[in-house]
Length: 496
Ligand code: AMP
Ligand code: MG
Image (cartoon, rainbow, N blue to C red):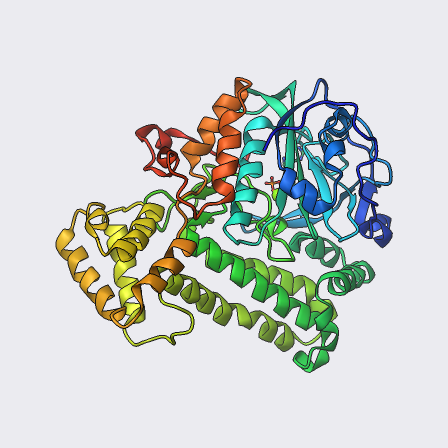
């Protein structure tokens, strides 16, 4: 996993570019080129993703690629644009937003969109500077790839390029650009934008575009009286429910679940002040700007539904009957708990082939209560439980708890529940479900601090570990350990 090095490599990137979004027309975007970034250098990159995209790896390693992906040269065949959207932020209608610092370059033949984030001012930058800083770019790069490796729907990150260009945040930081990819970057806020302006032609055009490209089955759905837009709302609700269930099961707190950060494909999108839980504190707030705790970890499932209601409202003029929209949204309320329970059962080592037994929910609830009471490290607990089942030794699990009597009683109920299940099978499932490596804040912070000194080794190490989060990686235990005391002093806010 070497960083690309400058060479006299080909000028042809190997991808034939397309941009179907650009065909939607000028109401949807503004065409513009990125703002050049002085003296760029490589910070991090993923050859694996480059190959998946069909990029010529020699080109990707070239100085041309460095310049293109920093916004200093145009990429032949692309048609860069910033899209317009609106949205609700912290529960309040925020009006027009849009790609204030991102540009869509185009789509690969397989339909994967490539975006530069941090590439300069756009007509939608409002008070912002159009830039991203190295710190937040490293967090997005590492986390989106980590989520992908955990099997959680997400945008991906191809590379980061950095520059000495100063950017003002709480302090002066170095600028960077992340190149990120997704089958689509369309947000709930894109629909809200046209609905709020009563631009029903554009609203329909956008919905048709999303259906044709991503949800073609909605055209002939037998449900919702054959209403394709209600079917779309239903499909988005289902995907969003699955993703939200995965966040809750793995202990991921997004931090800014505004409707403009909600992907119409159910992807985890716009990595800002996110955090993986260390101790299991359900009402943990990871975003220091979130003074009311609207986006606290345990509020995510409800706030996601609130966001889906806003999407439903936006699609209402296309759907027609309000009852149809409500029926389409209702699936979230069954899909989310079902998905969450499925994932938690796997974490406990209960195979999906075995139907739920009475008492399972009690065992689960009892466990979560114990984890809260002793503020046990969420990831370490699950990994140790998995090892405990594999080796029939629960001493390392006991060590995590203060109230051992309560834990022993719980372990007894757990053993009764799983008495008839093959332990090898269970352990196997658990070790593939409960990751050893997650992107803890303090671990990311160490890579960021090293990178700010020009050392990208930590970043590469983390990239390697997080690409295989379920493997043991002997020798790298420190990266899977409890957070040090200073971790609680890391302050992450919206501004990045
Ligand atoms: P976020 O909270 O990062 O999802 O961003 C909310 C809105 O602010 C979006 O329209 C972003 O494009 C915009 N935005 C965030 N940071 C900047 C920035 N540095 N410059 C311009 N626009 C920004
Ligand atoms: Mg955003």
